[in-house]
Length: 228
Image 1 (tube, rainbow, N blue to C red):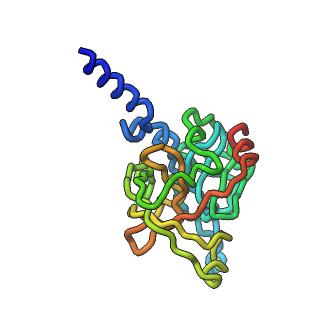
Image 2 (image 1 turned 90 degrees about the vertical axis):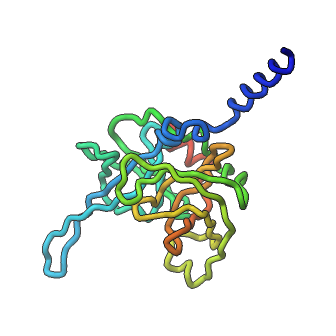
Image 3 (image 1 turned 180 degrees about the horizontal axis):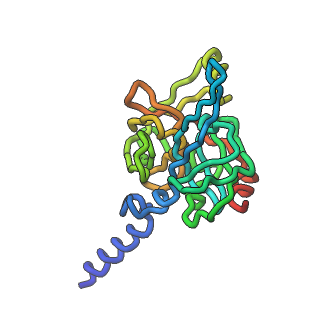
């Protein structure tokens, strides 16, 4: 009986250190913090006519009124629609890190489930090449965000010529073997073992892989977003 008691104790301890996503992806905190965001974009056509379009990305609740996503998703509008809500939310502020990441400070109902427990300025450093990762993305307009899993690959160094056209300063492009489609931009990529945030999706590469950049928010910026 003693060995059975020890075995049960080991199993209990193991379950306490596993991330929620590894146990039940649909009910994990990371899943609950993932949201579809859309902007209504107003532009003028070649003949001066009004044109209305929509831009869709994936975002992650970092605080009660804070959404973390890719900076290139920012359409420059004053309102944002979350999860097909009937009433758009006002955007009161933006926090950027210079690496294609932005935090929208928004109004509306509070986000009760957030991913702040899985993110700190240095959490991305724990994920190494070969480590398993996962994300929830609204790519293709799918709703709710869908679970996908892959591995961290290597790093591609961008040339100075390429950097001129990007919203980043760090030339290191982190690669993941996760298929990315339009609408996945801004999806949080988590370490499967620890559940912690690694980075955000920036774009798909060769219609098969994911390209992303380091997170470079300061603790002060994160704290401001979490308490807004």
